[in-house]
Image 1 (cartoon, rainbow, N blue to C red):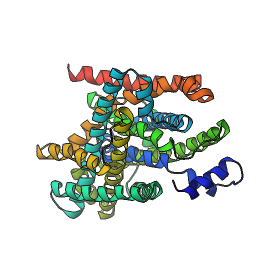
Image 2 (tube, helix red, strand yellow):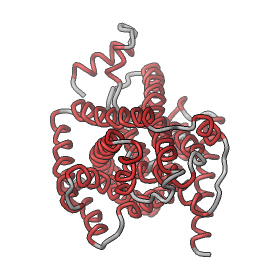
Image 3 (cartoon, one colour):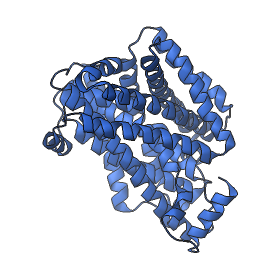
Length: 418
């Protein structure tokens, strides 16, 4: 953060300056974290959910988004109050063997995230310019490196670039809803009627949750807030938390609406006439004759913007996880290069891009309890958070949410071995 931005934030905290415009100095962490909630993994699982089950899995999207808001707010609070990020606190307060296991699991989660995000960006380039997927992957890698270079000019510049890409995704799906023949009463019913029709619906539900509540985003948010605006008193911390919670509600609320729009678009376009849609490439090629060239173009714009922004943010999160757990630092460009390799391997082995995307989200959901449980344990420690520990209602709701996700994962694994 620049000295000018920090000074502006301090004037707001001290009450010397008021107004909505003044709060722009605080905007950023939740916007960056929200990228994880509109990445290509979301597009893949949401398209399959809408195409196969119409509006029937909208309730899963809303549930996952509500859980995401809670845990991102908890993560942000950890950074604001303690000045440390989640991975660092795990290293300081948990047994060493457990920390190493958590680090390995978190690194696997970061790798699964990278596969989804990088392949999504590569697909966007491939479909837009009619090139082989491997060529699209090289193009995506070059552009992501370029985005990360903005971080050298200051974090604010990187936030603006990422925010612009998210805005492109949001506008694309808003326009898609204006084009698609949405059954609004059916959508409203699907949003409030919890049901899973079969095993495939369960798999998709777990994938939607894994694509929405992202482990690396939970770790990242605490790092984005930990040293952003120095808090000089508990009153400053209360004000920072109040502002942070508003940003979480706004940024993740927008991300949730984008996910709802994805499912509704897929349900309106594919469920009746093309329910067998299973690949992003097929969805794009089917969308154009069904809803017109504009719908196809908007789909590609959203896929490309989603993949590029989330790939950049995923690299930042992976670096923060490594440094927090084991104190090991490698140049961020080298980490981006290393995390590209699994994506190239997946495609070179002939795996379908959509399968890699969906299964990467299922893997994320199974690894999600690691940061969720860590947050639950740390958020109730008064020696760390003092008067800012979670209240009983917040802690209970967070614990129930974690148990539901754990339960879904256990059922999925049991059915996979039956």
